[in-house]
Image 1: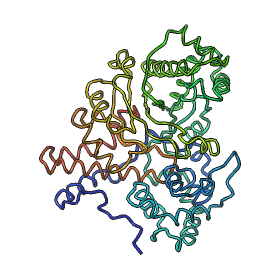
Image 2 (image 1 turned 60 degrees about the vertical axis):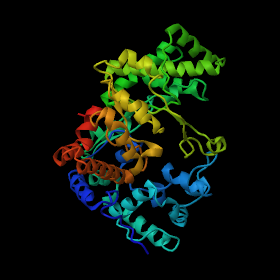
Image 3 (image 1 turned 90 degrees about the vertical axis):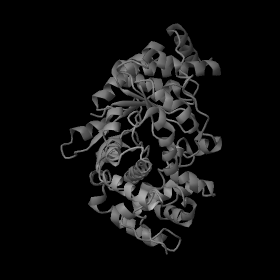
Image 4 (image 1 turned 180 degrees about the vertical axis):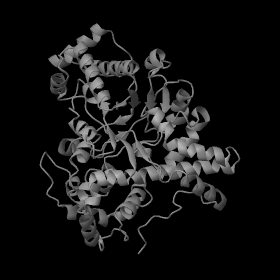
Length: 471
């Protein structure tokens, strides 16, 4: 059977001379601390520091990168631990783990397989490949490992060399877990919230009015009016900044940002509460709020991350049964230059405003994002994300944006994960790919090896630190 441990030269160039350069560049950053300025790990996990329940609950069920591919070959989501129709799955951890092992070949050639092999080998000490024959023994080994105090969340946080971990949080979240961690002298890490107001931008969605009510209670302001909603968002942004937050995040279907006059926005807000909202009004309201969030970022300095171009919950029956974030959000065609004209006209050269642009449509890297970052002081080219946070796509990203934006106007790697134990594997992948790209530039005599080594270090340290104002 093939050994589980990934090859030490994985992702390096095949040419021996260039590979040697890549090895040297990678050695500059292999053990550097991790800055994770965008992710979805729950801060309560670290605040509570309880042992992980079982291997499947840690490694499979919460990770839609994994569950979507198993679903694609016919494994029902409830057999992977996802709650159906509000009822907990009856599949136990061992049964879920067996399903992964039965379909281990599905992940060949994918970044998920690479992350798993690195994680299983380097974090958990597994030596055998998952398979139906090894499933139970590997499950028992993982279960025994997770019972060791050295594998509790905080111990792993330190072992992973995570310096900063950003979470993603609703404006109405009380941030209690973040406050507990900040006040705990025994925890040396830095876990910061990220303000995500998407759920307040779509007045046509069920539950919008109830969400306004909850936000009103937390912010202590009347959100039944449009100016009240803006004031509530402003207050909660201050609370996030006081809890250590340095950024916001927004995920919308398009980057349209046309502002409305207050009277018109107020009318649409009222129509949404009255149940008379039209589809056109809902889109206008969303685009106006995107502009207002940029306006607030220019005011308070929170870095604005923008993730447009995803068709959320593409398969309605799956959404109805299992809810959101269950693997069927799919890419759409992206656009930035024209849709962002209002925001960049008014804030593109503002000294406080900062905008990091992400896409799942690779064609926009060279056509729009790179050129925008290459002119506007406020704009940064966000790293490949979601469907394209892969070795090949990271190389394509570097080739697409470097000509027009260089390296310093990029964001640094974004792991964007709920799978806590995959964080070091994901960052290691990025460091290896960047070392390979820089090695090629050195071999072609376009960059000196000395400059490439400086760039390799900057890509994991001062570039993300500066982009996201991490200090």
